[in-house]
Image (cartoon, rainbow, N blue to C red; front, side):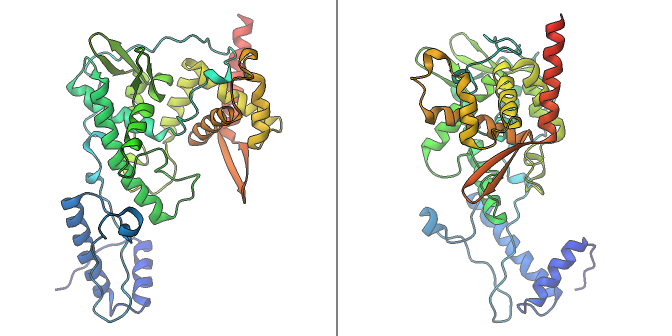
Length: 378
């Protein structure tokens, strides 16, 4: 049988490379092997869920992945890279199905800080909330859950279901990072549970969905960034705020084009939305961004230098109580979130790390400076 098809120039280049490797007789041999391998991979994924190609028994204790079909000639087989169709993502993480909110979004949570006011370092967003892609995943999943529970999703139910989706997605992200040898600064799987440890799933649920302590206090990144709010009657129920709904519904280059063709975690629309929201409605995060940008601009470009710069924002009565490791955690978390939003860039030379402010970071600082000047003139 003869089949003709159109392909991209890059696909033709890859076909040529495989043919020239000596493992195949002709293009038909390459395509036949690739289709057989893909069929086997998708059949195995449909049966058992996402799989990792390689010595998984040695790495994780899991049974080895199925062998791929070798080419007809007796040479070393060439394995086609795994392809993960978007359909394999949890349904609650897909953009499809998110429309307008079924009820008016929740108002923003109350805040003890006012815009532009100094915020002590120990009252910044918790440093262990160190990535923002999980916030996107949790908002997207919560939006789907709210279509069935418009009056609010019970916190425990939301945390359990969203963390389970995050674990499934985390496995796929880890596979992607390993396949593309993504360096640790750009890795997409960071902060997602991607193994069999229950602690990782619980950590994700507590940090990137929500958690309520024995005193009834609700916490988590989504609440700190005012992407969600909650009601408290018999149960604590989670609701998205207006900006949370917008964030959930916007296109994301990782979630909505999986496997992604870029390591950019957010679209320009998402970044614009979040930065505008932080600047106007999240004083603690806004102050952290402006303070770190100011420190780096003044020459505090390394972690130790930034920590020294931030020491002045520790309350006098807390100087002896806050450890250096806590201060470093607060700095590291804020910087990681800023890197995700493109405000800062990391540079590594061996074990030495330094930071530089990007053009977007300079624009953010300049915009806030103008806002402060206007406020003083009123």
